[in-house]
Length: 247
Image 1 (tube, rainbow, N blue to C red):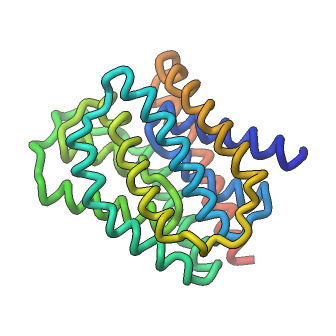
Image 2 (image 1 turned 180 degrees about the vertical axis):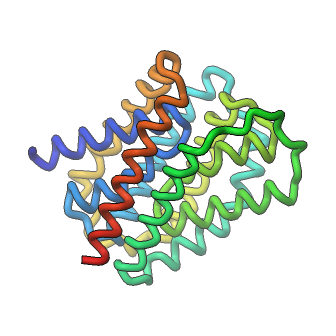
């Protein structure tokens, strides 16, 4: 396959997951850029942030149009992550590529296990400001350090910590991801090396369109089925990255 076709296919898959689940899809962006499109880990993290920011903003518009974004709650949650995202983004640009790849594999495995774990069927907790700030700061740090949106952490946190309904949590997580990704991208400006915009642009465009389709897909396939399928894909990616580091 040509580089352009690979970028379009990868972007579509990531957009579908992000639009349907409100998170998780961006975890595949960096491995796709490294293993399919021959980016260095450092360049892949920066390019991943560009793609995640554009895709999340596009998907956010679709969810906001349907009234599924809690703007005040999302902005407060995102505000707690802006500084950690900025600092982590600056730090990531100075780390060895092996360390970045290993950390990314660990986060991909964590995301997969989180998706496979049965959801808590009980009522959401009463909102706890301190816990919400801690969760928002942690999410921002993950976003800045690894170039992922962190929606797989944001959605459960918004439900259990802030008491949002699932549809609202999915839409609001996209707001949080967009804000954190922008902060991290600002910190990494000039540290990504050769970004190859001829690859990033079609990748991001396909992801944005895929996110719109993912939102519609979520109405036809149960969220549990989508999460399980994506979780197994993430586990495979995590294993591939760890093997690459060891070998």
